[in-house]
Amino acid sequence: MMRSGFLPDRIIHLHPTRLCNLACLHCYSESNPQQRAALDPEVLSSALAALRSEGYAQVSLSGGEPLVYAPLRTVVERSRALGYRVTMISNGLLVTERMDDVLAQLDGIAISFDGLEETHNALRGRPDAFRRACAAIEHLASKGFPVAAAISLARDSIPELPDLAELLVTLGARGLQVRPVARAGRARSLDDAKFYSAIDRARLYLVVRALQQELGDDVRVHCDLAPTIGLWEQRDDYAGLLGECGTVCVEDRPLADLINPLVITDAGTLKPIAYDFSPRYNVGSIDALSLDTLREYKRRDLPQLQELIGGAVAGLQNARDFVDWFDHCTRLSERHLGPAMALAESS
Amino acid sequence: MRAITPKELSTAMSRQLANYNLSDDVIKSLAERVTIEGLFLGRFNPCIYGICIDYFTDKIPNLATLTIKQKVAKWEVFPYGIIEWDRFHVQVAFNVDELGGKVGGLPAGGFGH
Image (cartoon, rainbow over all chains, first blue to last red; front, side, top):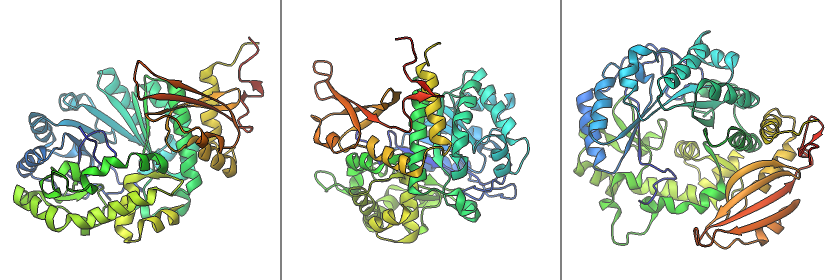
């Protein structure tokens, strides 16, 4: 099957609630313990069924903290019954034996980390956050569950990555996904020193490549940063969204060939690519999701997304940089700048 | 004296890269060298030259893209041939003086050979 949007799978990022047992200083969704909104599992299940027929194959649960979402078990079971692979990202605080029955149904779970203990606890605002996240990795590994670590690093935490990676692998993590902290949500109030220059992105990319070699084939190490040259050479991954009509016009293409990943927010809004993607590109709402509404979206509203992503892809051709592609597109969506200009500006 | 193992060598490399011991200029030139148009980055190994990188491509490699890169110590092209017709493995060794193929002042290959 043709790839879509630089990803090997067609993914829904599901944020069923922004309720969280933490209020991290860098949280892009600004989740916290005061949030009460949560998606109705019946409405959500109907939407997931419709989106399955639009070509999506994986549901990636995030939040807020997915393990505080009361109907989680129902949503996971129904997603699996629809044929989705289901994965989750959690802060690990509630990963205990009590949750094993639902955790056992997941195709993968990642525990989030921000650095070594002092850094992690400071950003999470809780003195035992790191210890409990490590305990979660250990617990999941001991049960034989496929566990990984999702590592979000501020610029000044790059030096902590080799030691953190070594610790997490020792605890049982079978995968590491590393990304620079995104300037989104609550992170916007962090000091500028936390964010990356072009050289910092190159440094992080090289560190991750060195770690891949160090950790060998038993651990999957992934960096969300990619060389612009490589992305440009893979631009055919956007043939669904940007390609000529040919035999199948855009309106007749499944949504997953056009938008990947797709985000469902805690308000039930469907968005392209990222939680904080500009609202002007919203796809619709799970309350009113139907073949007709999607067809109308593709006909009327998709061209502005095509223009944005088309410009961003074109901007890759002459750039020599490392980018977090989805974050790059999200920042472009907010700024309405010409993509080539924005790429130059970001370096 | 025992030889430095590949694992120790690569561990040292990830820490050297992460610890801001290498200047921005070194990182910049290294980043420029590891991304080569038309070649997909595979393995990334420390070696006696500094860094050796395995690239893959499904097109006949354009070796001109390598020669314009600075400090290429050597390169080898391996056509997969009957295993996978349209796949080439290109191994490039870059001289990176600052990494130097050394760990703690010891030569990367150790003293065993």
